[in-house]
Amino acid sequence: MLFNLIIVLIIVYFTCKLYLYYIFRNKYWIWDDGAEDKRHKIDTNDLHFPAYFLWGTSSASYQCEGYGDLGKVDSNWSDWEAKTNPETGLPRIKRGQKCGNSVDHYNRIEEDIGLMKELGCNSYRFSLAWDKIESYQGKYNEKVIQHYHHELDQLLNQNIVPMITFHHFTHPLWFEQNGAFLNESNVAIFVKFALDMFQEYQTKCYLWCTINEPEVYVSGGYFQGMFPPGHKSKPDEASLVMKHLLEAHVRIYDNIKKISSSSSKHQIGIVKDIFQFEPYNPLNPLDHYLASILDNSMNSCILNFFKTGKYVWNMRGSQRLEYSNIKAINSNDFFGLNYYSHFHVKFQFNLKQPFKLVHQSNILMTDMSHPIYPEGIYRACMRVRNELGNIPIYITENGIADEADDRRHLYLRRYLYAISKAIKDGCDIRGYYYWSLLDNFEWAEGYDMKFGLYHVDLKTQKRILRDGSKYFREVIKKYI
Ligand SMILES: *[C@@H]1O[C@H](CO)[C@@H](O)[C@H](O)[C@H]1NC(C)=O
Ligand SMILES: CC(=O)N[C@H]1CO[C@H](CO)[C@@H](O)[C@@H]1O
Image: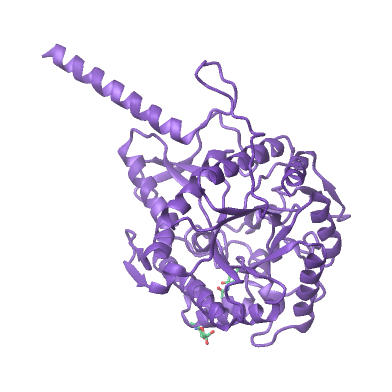
């Protein structure tokens, strides 16, 4: 009897060992020599990028433009920053910071395009400031419209391919006051804005992102309460907002293809970030279960919508919501993938919050407390490829907050290697946009997170290339 038990235990032990070995081998690569003889060092110089590859940086209007020539305009975000959190009495942004004039990118557009040129970039992703363009509902501001014409002209003069995002978290205050994307009638209003902008700029741009990170917008605004409108744990609202964002995406895609005279030239896609949710302990079924729920609500449900045309929201404590739109299946000419890192999900005894997101120890972190995890960008690319049928992918964001500038070089080296490997293994990746050219206003973090390839002194607005960024320039030079 005892003998049998011992045999069973030994078998279980080795099965678990084998399973863990399998998991870790797939999720973690051996970057350094390591002591074990079987390991071999990854050669991060072994890079392969196609000649048509786009190399650029990525930004969002609110985070870098500053006031521009209109002075301050109201948006959901400017309003948000100005107020304190009524629950805690604390400011919404770390240490009460305000976006203010940011890094004045609006007025320094020529200088900043010069910096892109200095890096060797051949593309730039940016968003149109809807809050500036249509501060008053129904009235487009001609000066701002002309500003973006000027920006596009300057980019084209420098042979930099523009990529425009219609919605990157911010919109005019009146839109927020009318319920933003919670209100179904507003879908048509946003779609109209996007189509008008398309018609305005279509001769100067052919790469279009509809909406940036819908699931981050939804979870920030309707779950965590750290983005406007600051609602907390409102799954019913979240399900509707998500539905309306997806609906807006499909309608913009469909309409652009109808109204544009050269519809095959214009490439339109959604931008979605993928943070993997991993079980903290791969041998704990509860960790697995919770990780799969999070992955489903943040990742799978959106990928499935584009794969099958069906969006299903099914979360405990909220109403089930199903939405089908067959047009979703062909509503992306490319997939804009934002990738930073992954999370580990750990079960805890707490009915209200049955999990926490943790990080394993001994992992190199960014200042955002994200593990440096280049394997994840490879896995995310492969996932998109497998689920959406080898769709073209642009890495629309990837970057590191690193004030000390002692990990940026390593980060770039490893993530670019992982992307190159994904290309080698069959992903149709067409471009890479580092987040971001300049240090900028990182939403709830304020100016504390230094993502910039260039350091910016907010007082003098002087830009200085960080040492850790030079690797990016070297790689671009090699492949352009
Ligand atoms: C919903 O949006 C429409 C169109 O913007 C607006 O007229 C209406 O007042 C909004 N409803 C609410 C409850 O905000
Ligand atoms: C109408 C609406 O939701 N407006 C929101 C805009 O953002 C501020 C942030 O302070 C919210 O308080 C408002 O409710």
